[in-house]
Image 1 (cartoon, rainbow, N blue to C red):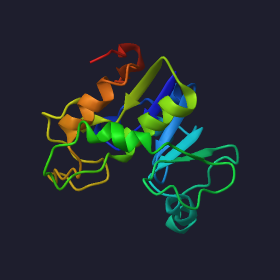
Image 2: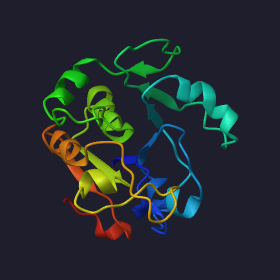
Image 3: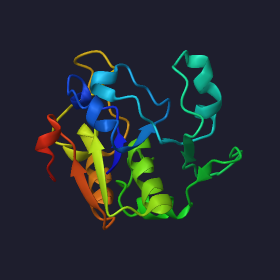
Image 4: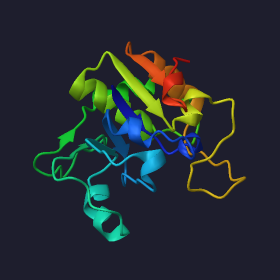
Length: 186
């Protein structure tokens, strides 16, 4: 299964690591893997909004990624894409415009939604598994990213709009839950 690993707190303590290592794995931005038991070690693709994430990753003291990892970028300006990496089409921003909330200051799609867009464009999967996509899959639940302090519920994106955009793609979206035997579709 193609699985995109988000930053939501539901992955913490999940024990999904060994299961994730048997899947095709997309990670976001810096491709954090704090511990193998929850996050696994496998990374096939990394999706970020801009190539700076790839260039600056080495400065963040993160474990190196496998040399076969391909980076995907989805930026409205599509500039400076390193050789061997892929840039998603600008048409995704036109698609997103149909869903974003008019007048909101939170107008850009999250890295997680950008990763889904890129997966659809580059891999054309029939199904995408999502883990750690807590706010997009459950916008009514006020959660935060796993690395933010407890009680901080900041989310700089329109979760409800992102959910609508996600489920209108025509791809089966499966929420990955702990334990792996309880995988279900929302």
